[in-house]
Image 1 (cartoon, one colour):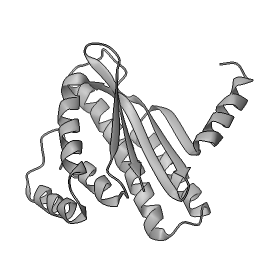
Image 2: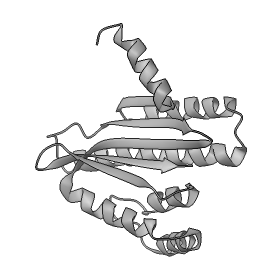
Image 3: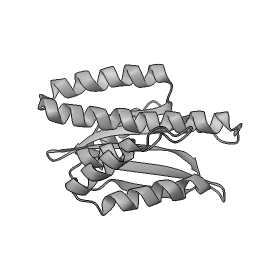
Image 4: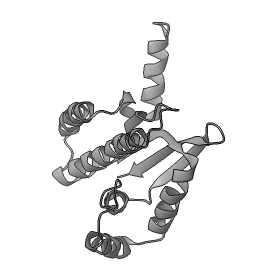
Length: 181
């Protein structure tokens, strides 16, 4: 990348309301360090404690989803794509914060995520609370955790979670998720 392109990149970030962006591998230590930086940044924004915790929690959930998926794919022996490399962005649009993430996902795995997201979109706050309680009673899914992450994010947002799927090839897509708080 040419050095002069940094100015253009900064201008793009500013015009898009991007406050924080990280693209690269999502290791546990990177998530922890990014989390600390995000928390300090949000505290400097003088947000309410509740809003800060919502944004921070969604950020952590999204980055852990990227990392957990990468670990799942590595555990299955899939080395075709760089599943561990993703992106997370925190931005501000008016008085709302947006937390977005994206990573490469096998197209066969996207169907399940989309089905869950579409189901959650149809639920109001009471329905999300009931879904959360119901999921808490279920046994954790092997290799996939308790399945509470998307429900918890949906409960914290002011609008339903949004997603976008960009096809890479016949087997893989780039899956992007956005939470507006």
